[in-house]
Length: 267
Image (cartoon, rainbow, N blue to C red; front, top):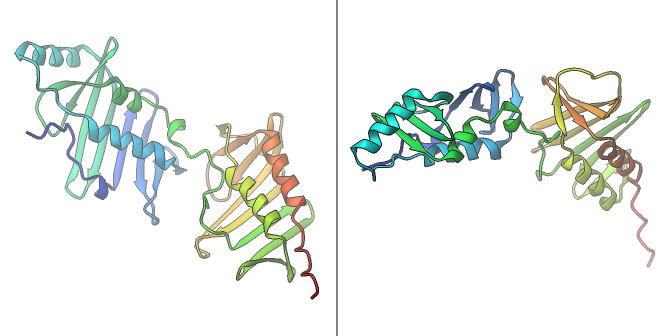
């Protein structure tokens, strides 16, 4: 017998909704087949965390090893327990629902796929109770390890545009030292928020735009100083990212250290 509480097709999922006491979140796929948060606001999602949630839901199974009194106890505990979360998953076949209640330290679930309530592992229950912040992408830039083809840096009145030409990075026609450009990109790639904010962004002191994915992805981020360091704002997106001062100082230093390539030695 199939013991799964949910029988969705992981490869064909289009929607995931998670309702708990902490949040009401809806996830969906974008044009690049990446998970995004659609509700309560269109935020970037941490794909690893979303996939981990789906893995936990797929692993939720009925325990059929007990006797009739165990099944009665599970149904009673579900009925008496407090609602912890509800998960709704949608694939090509439709939508399935898993409602989870917590009774003392134990979690019990009732599925739209099978009859009855069943005890589930605490790991699944705790995963479903996570707040939206745990599912948001803390990385400021998305380009990851796809090869950028254009880097634009504006600091005050100074603006520089580095363009990839073949294997070379160029600034105003001059070939730049690849190691120094790579060092800058590494700092930008690793930039991550310490927490999310809704307000506090002031006058930007730095703007960085990265073009990647063969020109299909353009990310523009402005940085403003704050009492705790810096606040970053991605263009055309809600929400702000709080950054510690050192991470942005490292980027500024790496930008300053981008230099021209040494001339080839004469033969």
